[in-house]
Image 1 (cartoon, rainbow over the protein chains, first blue to last red):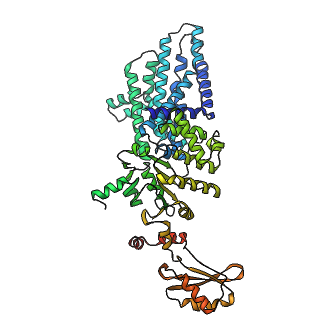
Image 2 (tube, rainbow over the protein chains, first blue to last red; image 1 turned 90 degrees about the vertical axis):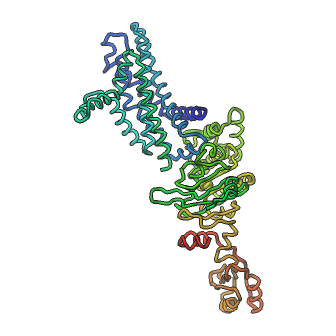
Image 3 (cartoon, each protein chain N blue to C red; image 1 turned 120 degrees about the vertical axis):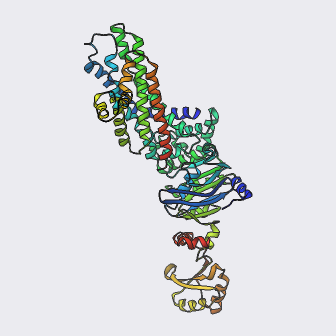
Length: 244
Length: 333
């Protein structure tokens, strides 16, 4: 735990020692705002909730989270610092967790900085802040799931562009798997149980439930197990690929 | 195969011990059954051409690569069975001295010291100490990316020394340093050597003569020679050869006279200093012939400008060992 905390601190500080954090947060805030007000018709809806804000998060994360995740391991391998990191007295699990949690904390900071929209909606009406809280929580957990996928894929390559593109594609599959676009592909040949299993993998289905204020433990179990699985693969991949 | 219990105990009690260490990358045998041990106080120079398996061997001992076969111990701890425990005892400088470029030198060393288990004032104290040792105080607050190659290398060195490890493994520690910095790093290594076991890899042969108490030559993944630098030098064809500088017109007579000495293998003619000519008298089996050469020349009344005994050239020995067919050298060693 101690080592995870040390890695976590180093990584989180690293985001803010370069323009990366600034650029990312500004763009994230600009896009979430633009989507909520212009595409989501925040005002025209005339309802005191943040549905117009949260509904675009899966699509934003599709691009932005792989952008954070791509450097996690690919950069270490490219610059050779992985040899330094993995010859320090820490375990691979501690390193993977520390880096992952730092990236997740960074996402949390970006997400927290959208608080003006929460203030706005509270000034305009009296929204159900429980639902909004659920929306933030769901959004954060979903970002964590995207991030776990991205972190794992980042360990597979030393090329950050490849890590980004592949992670975005995999995240896209997980997001879309509840829609006919993906399901039809499986319906053509797979039995109903498999089609249903694929549908259950959809981030959208699970996120929409949470976003609407329905806090079902199963949705969180889904994201938690997905994160655990991808991070487990991440550890295995780091151990296998670190020397190549 | 060192199988007996006593031998195994000896291996484990050495600070660094390798037993039949092997690493295959697909069909390539990068390291092919390397066994050796390094005791406290030894500085072992690991020599070999590029791609010989030096770095791969070091990476296995440092716990970065998992051996295909064989075992390695650091301070008696098996690096495969207890990797974190072994890494605790070890200071390791990877090839190229990688570090996190966006951190300042101070921040980076504080991070390493934290991972090494130092907290509070002890951490600051450790970092101060090592900063002084490698002389990087004046760049401490600059991002590592902005440092010159020499400073970067020394930050890497500091990183390996922060916890004052008993076992130190450094992959090309002086690569990219200027002659002054090289000298500084070598002095540093020598000063620390007494209570540590040190392995450095290098292909600078003068470095081996300057700092190492022992040299191991490796090529194609196998150990081809293991001895003190002097032992290695003694393998040189030119070991104990005598170089004589003469007037050009004395060459023929001198050559004839010197060829007649017992134990002389060959007499070679070469250019001397300031238009003089020189002869190199090469002995059979490296025996000492300087006295005989001197006596012969004075008997014949041949005047010499200068005369001295050669120690042999390490780079020549290196070439000789590493380019010979493997079977021949293995039988020789």
